[in-house]
Image 1 (cartoon, rainbow, N blue to C red):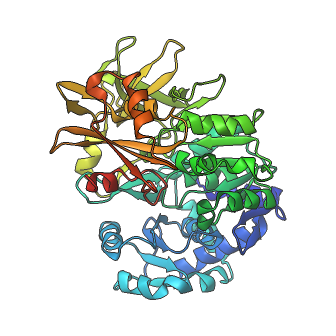
Image 2 (tube, rainbow, N blue to C red):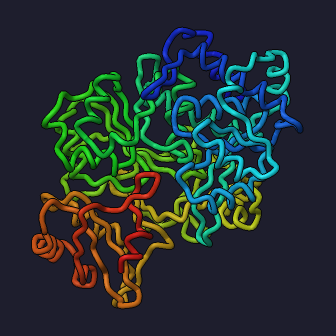
Image 3 (cartoon, rainbow, N blue to C red):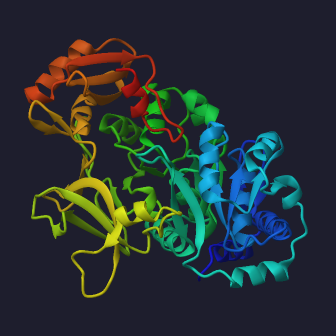
Length: 501
């Protein structure tokens, strides 16, 4: 297998009338999805200039149509980039300037803005494209021109310089990763995935390609429901969602409101999470309501397709204990390095990743690629590329990897090096604390703990941390917020918090 759409062919052949993609207003069988994807591919191929081996921007609302458009780009032999329609036009233009797409696909609601952003780039209307009669012979020929090391998509993440970085993912990356996630968590045609993350965020790769490989049903959940936890749970019940893969902040919304206490529980049997540290107190709330469900903490940067390590919950944790990130995914190699040497037993080092999950690099940014995608310093007999994650990890006494923070996120305070995550973990065990994040105010050399709670628990937090952390790690200030800011991916927005200092 060398092309992602071979997964769609197989699923559409084996389960043609099974529902594949759903959103709030539309539902498509795998047979219908295949037809729409090939129609989009045919329409793209008919544009002036070939799309083969070239990028195409997808500027559409998150939903089933966007999924068809993304896969349609692959049918035309190209690779896609999903653009966030809610982002400022300046950032979208910065992405398009790097991408230089062969075309943009858009929907009616965003057509005017898409044309303004596109300039001389052709803009394709999705509805017309999906209705195009497929030229199956041409689509087959385009597929044969693509090999597994060709790009499937470029996903842009924030860069330290303010210039977005495009992570280039190949067909091989997706095929290898999706094989692991489907086999590990038992995705099947009986699986109903509740998609929470945007399609420009790497976690959506698990939902989309896990469904494509296994024949699972992918339900695209309305974003607005995450402001109304009871309605969200009711929606999951109505759509018979049984598998979640969400960021911890989204799971925390339900836990904060204790929404599972007030409504019928959705039929969940698998609950996965990634993207940020999971507050154990919130996880314990979910586990108390789903004692027989599988829970797993997944870890991985965008540069490893989505995930490279995971820990399936096999024991109980106190509310103030951290979860390990576990062990390597099958067919994924992990090294813990201190510089260019392996870390000693019990020593923290940088997590480095090798294998088929590792991206091709950063699109049109060779200097940045060379900084992170480097020759393996341990295996020198035969050239091999490692991705340096910038994350500090170490093994615990159970042989599990434990996340220790970022190499570039350490704070030097009162002569000590401090990881803000350690302070946050200690705080999260405080009853009635909904969320928190520790930020360093460098100008005043102070640690500031922002927290969200229904009442002011500053006194309780001070007492708790005084009993759990050394004096040099005690926050100097506590700031209660009505609502913690979150970025578009659902993570706590630390830049927004830093702007409040």
